Length: 88
Ligand SMILES: [Zn+2]
Image (tube, rainbow, N blue to C red; front, side):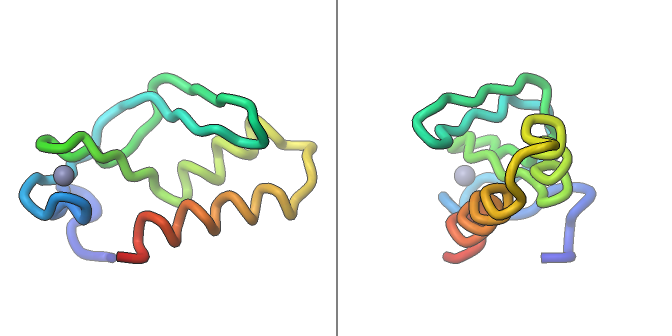
């Protein structure tokens, strides 16, 4: 996980492409509501366009969206996100 944080890494989904730091739109359905946030930093695969968001980015995003929301909700979604992206 620590390798290549700055310059990209092999895509965990297609294993062919390379995920590099880019700005993309974060989109997520959460409790039946579509969240869409443009210009979010992520690592995006140049082949399959898989986007992986860093935990710090998600945390900051959630802080912004749900700064006063229930903490356990934020934790559960970031935990889900992490296991689905890293749990290969
Ligand atoms: Zn890929």
